[in-house]
Amino acid sequence: MNYLAGITDINNRGLSGLTRSSSRYASVLAAGVAEVVAIPAGAKHVLFSANADFWANFDAAAAVPTTEVADGSASYLNPGLIELGTATTIGLISEYAAKIQMSFYG
Image (cartoon, rainbow, N blue to C red):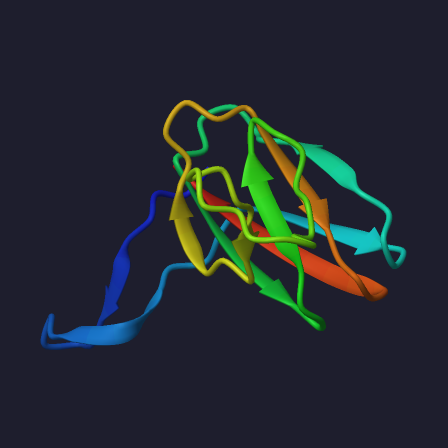
């Protein structure tokens, strides 16, 4: 698995972007149907991309909030780049049919 690293130009100046991931997953969600994805061994970061709003949670089921969640346990809405820490699974859900791409980095 590739490490998370910024990219540089020929003069070693930092550019906006990341190196390619060698571990990419895609999930296809039906509206309102949750899914759990196992995080690949060695992954330390994940970068999400999707064609619709979605919610994600780590080592827990994702949930679309229907009331206020003020105890720190709310799922993430459209997370970008996330450090995985000790998480082993990612819970996903969307109110819409959604395609979610996950690029994992070591």
